[in-house]
Image 1 (spheres, helix red, strand yellow):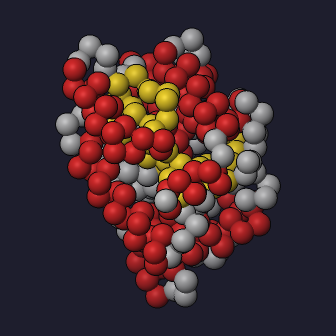
Image 2 (cartoon, helix red, strand yellow):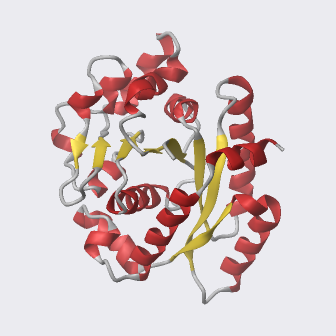
Length: 264
């Protein structure tokens, strides 16, 4: 089912970009047409997919301020049929200032996707680790929100803040926004803490938690420095297997059921 997914968490270092890169790749390798939108000025998703963020002629910044069309900015990713990227670099940080005086400033990305979403099965948006105009654009354009959570002590505190933000966006800007799901990352089976975090979050969110858990994995950490997703860098690793399983769950998800559950 076609949908736009914002991958976000207001906490940094939770595996958000890793999840965006590898979930998008696995969806494309499963035969889906996928667009990744890098909305983080750090451009880590861009470099993690092997695109040189320092030599871009155009980026998602040009889309947001109305200087370019999507087909002029989208980059096809080598070795992954069906996957395209709207790249980002530090120029995107300037958009935060420029958008302030623009009409419908929170809906600029939504307008970009108004036609493009029919060309892709999935659009995944990598959000900055903060609540700003770029994140709001992502949430206003999305159908659902996917939340990576690191299995560590403060996970639930950060999740509570994020759910409050999502509730505000639903109320004020995007009433159709639903919870795609929570995915646990950096899970260490050797520690009791990881299991405790999983149990605690499940007790609060129940049906919104994905069954797939992403393990703490050396290969996953190494892959971005090579500009490769995990399924190309280490296809037989546990990290690759986990993201392939997550992609299967995402493809099988009924967005309308999720939307109804999130509002009940």
